[in-house]
Amino acid sequence: MGLPAIVILAALLPQKPPTDKAANPAMQPEVVLAASGDPVPLAEFGLGDGGIADERSDLRWSDDGCTTPGGVRIECRTVGVKLTFPSGRELLVAPDGHLHLRSGEFAGPFASGLELRLGDGAVVRVALAPGSRERLREVTVLSGERALQPWRRGKPSVEVVTRAGWGGVRLCCCGDGGDLFRAIALGPLVVLDRVLVAGSREAMVPSQRLVVLTAPLRQSLSTMQRQHREADADVRRAVTAIAAVADRADGIFPAGAGLQRSEADRLRWLLRGGFELQLDLEGPAAPRLALFAGNALRPMVEWTLNADAAAFLSNPDPEAPDARWHGNGTRLPRTAVDLQARSELEERVYALRILGRLRRAGDSLRR
Image 1 (cartoon, rainbow, N blue to C red):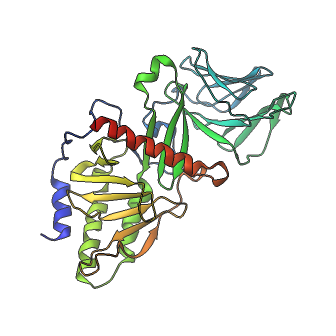
Image 2: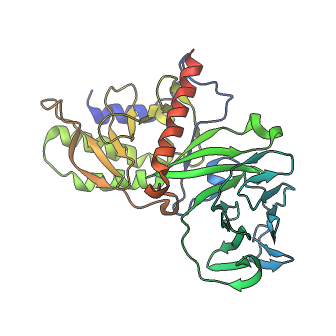
Image 3: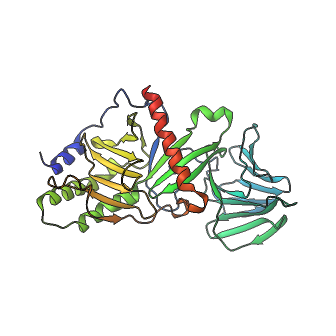
């Protein structure tokens, strides 16, 4: 049976059931598929809405600070920056860089400050000055094209400022607003690491999660078909298989789907239609994300997860088994630009460490 026939058949088969090595289906999914582009809404992380209100308004000034479109109130004082969410959750950024929940849990310190991303798309940036008498230097709240600065140069302010970049740590306020995750993107893969959660919610909030942004993957499958136009029969069969996947992408990569392990000793997860997604942390151009059809030993396509992320067609030539890929890669469109790993903060190393921790978590399940 040729490769295209296998792919089409796999698309018609029911999803492969978990093996005895698979993770418990009742557990939180390790991987979530997200369909949005840039910026990625926090709701697509599958970790709650961030404790925001259903009704929306404009970013506006309020007592001691401002209120975001989703109703998160930001109050700025010398003792710190307090965020009060419509859910009732309260979060304090202290001048020493620690994050505190009213229930007593804390994280940090983030000595130079941090950026907090909220479920309504607003961003709160708290800049600290270590060693200074007035450690709380500036607070900037951004929403859409607006940027308000309720705290400036160590004192209250009502400045409207120009949007600017941020060079510090970024955290996402998920759950009820108090589930904080550090988010780092490696190409189309967003690595989430939990840094703070209330004790009452700890059992229901995963320690780490991967979010796969499917839009650039799907686009690369379509572009790849146009890039490989050789008359070689093996290549044509492989490209036909890629086209079959692209045509069925809505079913294979359903938006919002949570994926469970197919094997505990590898970072490999079940997709619909009998396909599987695997993340490799070692080998050429690692880390790599690979798509497998059924129980095939070789992937159909692999995506590198570097700054210049690209898709590669697996070598279809049986006469050249040592060549991993066929032809040049297909460059992925830029995505999650604001979350991509930054070398100056060694975020790539940080993200790879979280992925290694995730793999070890699977090993503990096997034992």
